[in-house]
Image 1 (cartoon, rainbow, N blue to C red):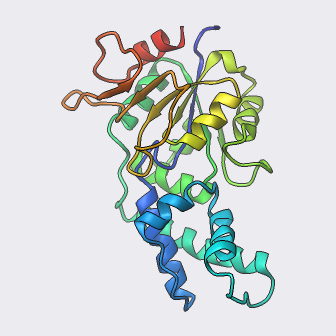
Image 2 (cartoon, rainbow, N blue to C red):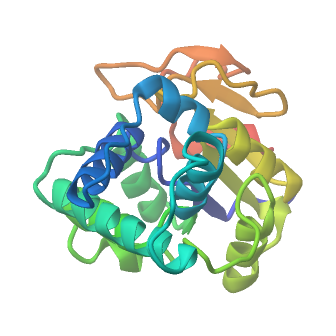
Image 3 (cartoon, rainbow, N blue to C red):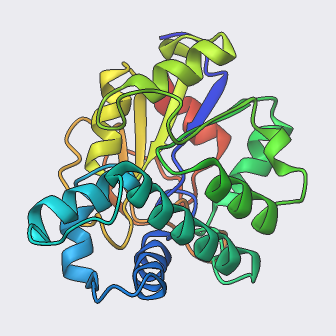
Length: 251
């Protein structure tokens, strides 16, 4: 294993507990479109197995609304619904209603100070990433990340490894010098298929997922007054995820 140089972050559920805001934003978008569709938390948990917002709507139409007649072109209809949902989501984030998860800001700042390179590898749309970073880290925080691989920049979304391959190629790094951060089973499969060691922090919607193959599984990254809880893996006395712990994990 080479020296750790690069951290690659998933976004939804990893940097922030976004999924409930996404669910509510989908429902508001449906209502604005005059639809009586409502995604409960139970249904949304099932839909999260489908990666990507537009893909989720398409799956829902095919499996839960087979009698629904789409007005016009189905791709345009789904894209319009998703664009409406994205606008609602980013407005919510801009209003300060979605903080980062414990330890995220601390670790990112420490990583930057330590000279580690940062990248994002996510299936969410670029606008969602921008809103989250700008309103929780700093107005210029997108520039902290050498690449923000998001949305449809690759044809196959997670659990395919394509988004991680894209990010590493853009940064000119190999899997042996990187560590990935994920929160879901699909995300873990994606990172591991790209040969990446992966640290998982379980989120509200992924606590029951199978994380076999992760280097470390925690409930959160931890803060000085709120240590993490280890679900699986070894932390050698650490109570927060620090750059030192990441280097130990990577080696």
